[in-house]
Amino acid sequence: MLLALSLKDFVIVQQLHLNFQTGFTVLTGETGAGKSITLDALSLLLGDKADYSQVRAGANDAQLSALFDLSELPHLAQQLREQGLLDEDSTELSIRRIIDAKGKSRSFINNQAATLAQLKTIGSQLIDIHGQNAHHSLNQESAQRHLLDAFSGSLNLVEQTKIAYHNWQRACNALDDAKNQTEQLEIERERLEWQFNELEQLGTHDGEWETLSARFDTLSHAAELLQAVSEAQEYIDGDDGMQTLLSRCYRTLQPLSDIEPRFTECLSLLDSVEAELSEITHQLGRVENRIEINPNELAAQEERMREIMSMARKYRIEPNELPEKQNSIQAALLDLEAAADIEALQKNVDETHAIYQQVAQKLSQARQKAAKKLGKETTEYMQQLAMKEAQFHIELLPTQPSANGLEQVQYQVSANKGTPLRPLNKVASGGELARISLALQVVTSQYTQLPTLIFDEVDSGIGGAVAETVGKALHTLGQQHQVLAVTHLPQVAACGDHHWQVAKHSQGEQTISNICILTETERIDEIARMLGGEVITDTTKQHATEMLKMAQAA
Image (tube, rainbow, N blue to C red; front, side, top):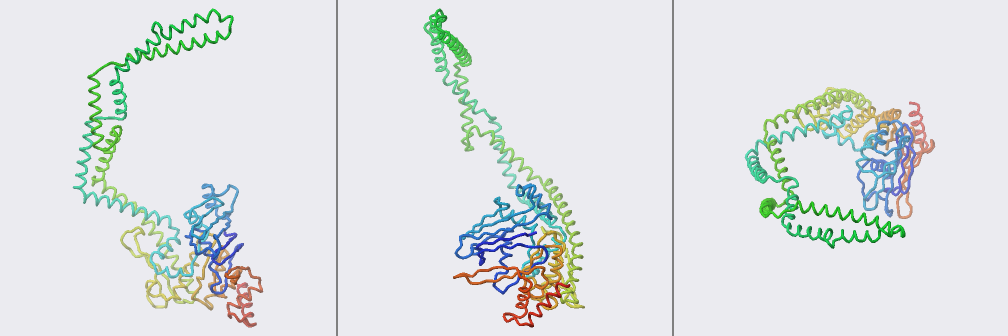
């Protein structure tokens, strides 16, 4: 549940800190006082896009933060722990967002940088906000379908259906392309085959160019290399070579090594030098044995390198890249053959279609079951909202397979006894639509696992006894969830377990909004204001007192 909300320099709020409680909390105030600012702030913390206009005039940035208790949401807590966003022994989640005057924002989850996508994913499991214009969207088939799917707990199945449909359509498109582009595919196949055969005939392989280059360098400089070997051997083993001079030096120092200990060290070093010279002589011998002056081999190497260089220039690549080019052409040929395999493509179409039908039919079954239940319970609730003879029904109309499933979801209503059911957008007036929307929201909210439900003036367009019924319904919801309702109806406000008032005042050249928790006496005054306007009489106060007592006794 939501524990606390803090705002600084947000819209017309200079600084505000709210501690939330369980049950049903009402938020009231005069029009324009900023009742919806709290909800706007929560929406931003749950991933909505930010705007520079949300920063209070004259401030550098707006700062928003909220604290949530996850003790009743173990699944979400485990997800956050796996992502490293929640300590093992912690059950509190902090979400913070900073919006600068340019509209750029930074988001943090438990003081770790986060993306808007992360905020939306987490927020969707924390709070459900019902906006005051929710009833307008009910005229859209997409909104009707989404509400039914959410009520049936089938949103994962909806996503699976979309994925299966798109996979099926891609398979169909691939098959159509293969059928329509047979000639073009054949031309491309012939081109690739010619290139592959040309490279295969050349027969180059990985590492060949490097080996050729090294061997060519050796053959082309054979005489120079053999001359260098001969001269080096003479310097080492000749009559006046280093080995002879080394022996002379050794014979000079050895007799005196008993007298001068350092001569012994010198003799040891001379032994090392002699060993190194022997190794050099051995290596020179190996070079001499390996090198031969072979004009025929040199010519053959030159010809092979010329062939490879010519082919590389043709394909505009480096010589050592030719084997990789041949492999890529071979892979492209295999892909082309697969693309032209009508039988295999048709098989893929059949398989993806079968998968789509399977998940779409599961979705249809879930919708049919949920439609009956939601229709029945919504009808019962509508009849409590001064629509005594009204009937609400959800019709599932078969349609062409689509990403949304096998049927069109259509909400139907009969506002009066004896009148046939007709599509919602054809028969419901503005007031009726608002009441139907409220009935749907209250009914569906009873089944949600979300800990916090927020209603933003969803009671607009109703009044009297109907408003009292709405207040009682929200109060009942408050026994299962944490409920916050922004309202302008005194009948709804009287049903709250807690009552907050929003007020604005001038401070210098600016307007500041603030929220305060009302005492019992202040609550009577606020409900009296809602009943009678600016002039509060004893009669309106008495009426407000009675309204509160009746709501608390219910």
